[in-house]
Image (cartoon, rainbow, N blue to C red; front, side, top):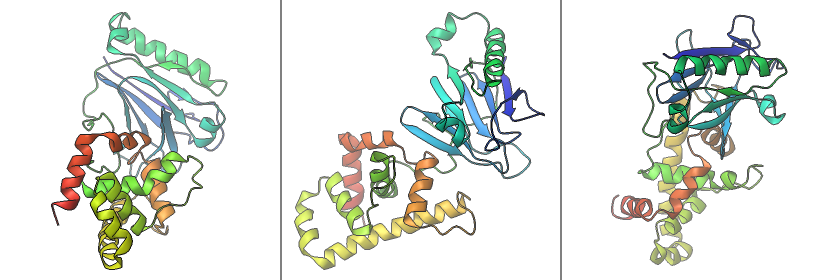
Length: 281
């Protein structure tokens, strides 16, 4: 048995949440799957966020009257859900997906989901939620290999991903987003460092022509990132895709996350990037 819980400020929802107008009247849906829980934004106008260890992402708004095309999949653990104000004020809904071991010692999938809905409804009356969302059977919701549904996916084994990661790195490390973002020559130099191309660093620093060639290569990848963001509708048609806007979109949508910084210490990933950057055109 599966389950689907629609929440918002109401009234035509399963769970009425006492929140300000930053939350839509029909804000989001939590769908119980046999491998976890899927959270999606079903508002045409309002942002909805999911927060957990190391990330806060903005779920894409509903573009038409059909089913949401993107969302966030929670395989195990806790995720906080709500408007930005709900999260900042410490009053989110809480979606808890038990581990397989915990699920096996808890009786009845139907009973677990009913308890989850009740727990959310009672707590939401005072602006917070505490829910246990258990496993269930619901088909038709695709997930990628990491269990995450994203509006835009970048393959980590590409040069484009490395450029995006180096571009975002300052704001992944500085959540206040006050650290200046690197420009194309700085991203190119970071690529040399990440891939261990130390023999090229001196040339980069001393040879303007070589530096310009690498910076131009990075600039082409940045153009591709801007185009992908525009093509996926992640920014309004009137929004100028400045460096700051693009990086904020990449981070807020979970396309590049703080967890990706761990790849910088992964020898296999670094070796693959070295092959891409220095043995291919």
